[in-house]
Image (cartoon, rainbow, N blue to C red; front, side, top):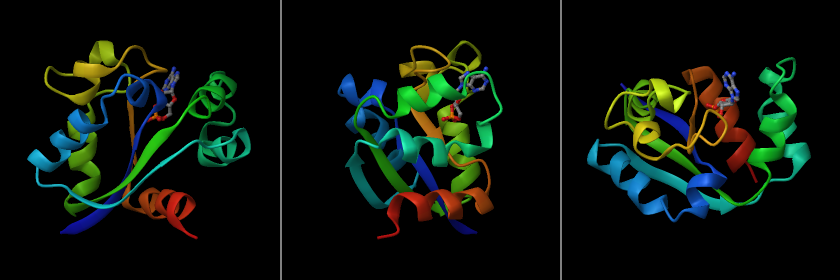
Length: 134
Ligand code: CMP
């Protein structure tokens, strides 16, 4: 079934000129770029986006990092897009990411892990709204 999901190409990947290489992986796997923009979010936006992690010990570092430089927000569209994007990203910690996944290829650490992807259709709707409404 066709779905939409939010992908973020995070500041560490933008900084290393990896936008094109990552988008190529999406397109090679039949995910369509439905909407896309490069933005530098502020700390308040970061706290809102990652609110689900607000009780975690890494919350402050996470918000500082995601607001530290420009990122690329992308709405991906396609069959099973949420799970497909997560499979293409690989595990959160690049040490555990399978060969050939985006995080295996490009991530530096669990913090600088190059990409974010919505974890469910419900959260995708919320996250897309946050980045692309208005
Ligand atoms: P992301 O998919 O953007 O969602 C939350 C982020 O928190 C995650 O990627 C990681 O980059 C970051 N993070 C930092 N430390 C941890 C941790 N111990 N467990 C899970 N996520 C972490």
